[in-house]
Image (cartoon, rainbow over all chains, first blue to last red; front, side, top):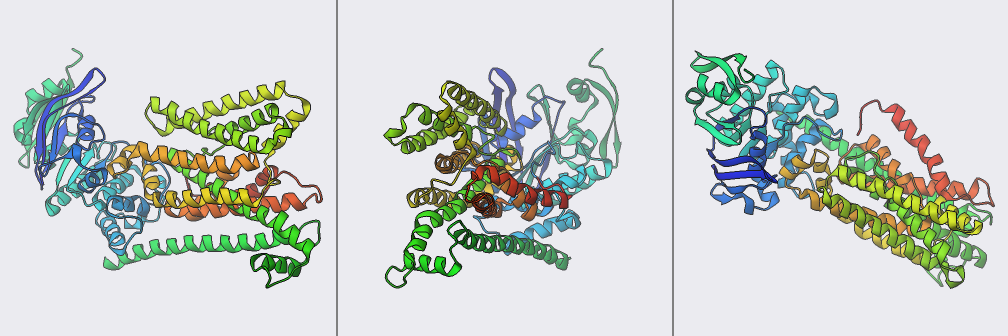
Length: 257
Length: 353
């Protein structure tokens, strides 16, 4: 199923955050949302998920997201927020099991338990299953949040900077997991991110936001140019090629000059 | 691989079995304590006399009992014992729900102004309604309506800023101080006897229970608890933060409001009869969380059992420790609950909140 966003705008009181955003995410496609801090990446993801209520239209599978019931929406979209706060000290297993909430009434059946075990296995965190989420590392915790989203069995994954707080190995692991889920299940994923090189390597397309507007969207090699990086980030950079992907080497900030 | 998965699911199921065992053990303890508590007392009844009196009450005509024993059991003790169980259960359920919905380990009916409002209501009745005009009904109504008012005020105040956990906690604390100050003011203006009556009410006591009151409180707790348990997944999801909860399909503000109102109603309906019995709503959920973890599908009810055990234990002690003098039960609850809590707290090194 495809996500179609058309003419989406959002403002907090009189402060406009997003204006006239149109984009599309097809099934089996990983789309990165790029842009400097404060450009509206997080707001965009929340608007799509209807945590915030935007103007304009958000359709999923041709259906208006605003008109869906909360449970119906939760069966289609899974959301992994930016903050790593997880509130109360539940076990990893219970945190991940929470993803089944939109699909079950009260009792937990064997298929639910099976799904949780399978996803824990897939993300290689089975050995943490009965540890408290407050007692594991940031990288492991991020995997728990992603596991919860996968157990939700969504048609679209919405991820807000899932790799920003992670070390190099966990960054790559998380990107590989998301990439393989998107490929295997044919679901769409929209992911706010900061690392241009990760975006260049793993995303099918990128959407670049600048001051609440789209500064460019398309395949990474077409979009991530020295000019765009200068205009949007205020950074001079050299863009080379490595393995057929664009390789961005940031040089210096020119914003303050 | 498959084996590992089955093992993990199996371990989870064993955890659930452990939770049921915890509740089962508590029920047995409560039952034993209830029997013991009905027997003990200054009248010196035996188990046989009490047993006969209970049967004679349930099957009139089929069993006969000593009239004195019958009167003591049915008119004095049994409703008090059962009231302790139901009230302890209700206060603990309210505490568990408030802590969950506000994601705050310090939340309880007492830290959020519900109880201070009831005290203020009681103080109004004690000071302004002459006891000749049947002070008790006025007191109950006044205490209950003040608590209900406080609950509505928490809702109203937090609505202004969006119904977040933080704004509700802040509103609750503000109300606690406001009602506390107003009660102090009333006490300042009252006579010595009135002041004493207010202070005694604040100790909390099960002295004035009756079958009618038991029926009322049981009705509230009996209707509210299944509702809260039915919505337990929403509480679990709220534990992961409002936005994740929302993305899991929880209507966050509606859930938070509903749960706070129901928990406040339970609290108000109990403490308007007993006075402020603190501590149970705060500590029972912690004890339960330490023992069986934080899944609200089990936590809410299991907390209730812990609360029932603590209040019944406290009241049994309060009646016997300085007999024939009866200590107000509110004074005893902490003495009973804290050793229990400390034991679990010291033993369990892992973070449980």
